[in-house]
Image (cartoon, rainbow, N blue to C red; front, top):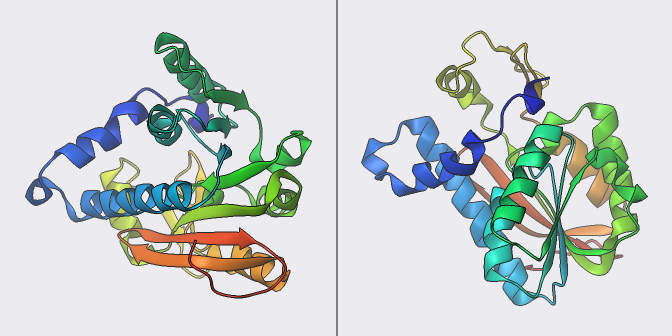
Length: 239
């Protein structure tokens, strides 16, 4: 299984990407970095502007984002959830090695999030994690969010949507034989499937339910970062 065959490189890849000079980055590397920087900026604003006590990162991988935030916001409890056993074990090893007290790492399918008896003030799906789920998983995940988010909680979804860059991106990432369904935005590498048009699913569901509203939307690099607020009316309100 692809997701269980890779892990350690994820702890250092983005750090190296951020440390290199822009002129030394390829177009795809720069697009990756720009989206990653936007994720960090928006999440920081959510943490600063709201009374956040508990955060859940769905599809956390090796936990590079929550490891960063846990070290800077020690009064906040962070949960990292991922379906990959190897990546969660990698995160647990880092937690133990660095004696991190405010991270809970859990291996499970994000579609089963409602099985957790917790309420989170912020739930994140970063780096196109939502796009790497199957459609059934995606719908189950969306349907479960209401049961695990606090009354005024925020949901951050970061998705890839620059389908015009997909072929070049996958060639650079080592999947030159990736097959791309441009109509549906689905990339099939033979190892895994990733959708670059997930907005067509989560936007109608979240906004159409009239229980969520978009607080923020920014597009840069490979995609777009959305911030949703759990509330009863459909209005635009920053963070």
